[in-house]
Length: 209
Image 1 (cartoon, rainbow, N blue to C red):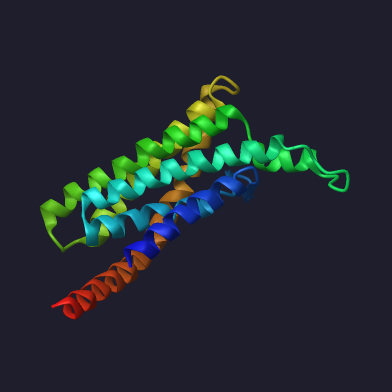
Image 2: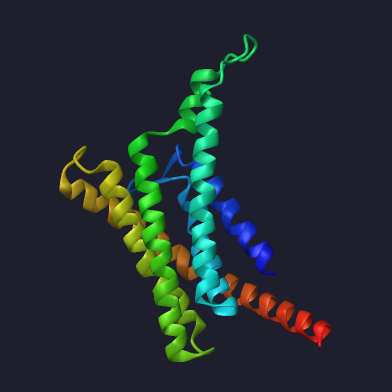
């Protein structure tokens, strides 16, 4: 089960980076990158891993995600630099969609590294305090705090100096509200995945004994 969770986690990270260039709006009050609807689900996956397999396993998953993102960026850069064939008439569009800006890329990596490790730390602290009880509390508390840090860091690095501070704060607030609501909605998914992971581990243990 851990293998599948790690694969899902890394896959969602890469997919989020690919679609990040697309912006969408919720009514007239919130503008979010398309990556947000994918990236928010990486936190519950890490929480499931820490809950079932422990803090160190969760940290290794986060590290693997960071390394994979760096490798993906390197290979994307290489593919962009390859000379386009005469029959390929969409080189500029290809570069626009996959290239991104250096500042946004740095913002994404820094916010990821800080927020995901914070999520692991907070979740593990609460797990030590409550044991197997109150999974909903440590899942939501760690995710909501980490999402706030992630949003604040990303927007500050990516857009700081390009707009008034008030506009930055509004952008952070509106995006965080959406992520906050999504975290609550994802709670049943965490319970489902934790149940499946524990059932799988119990089955594997019985086969080995």
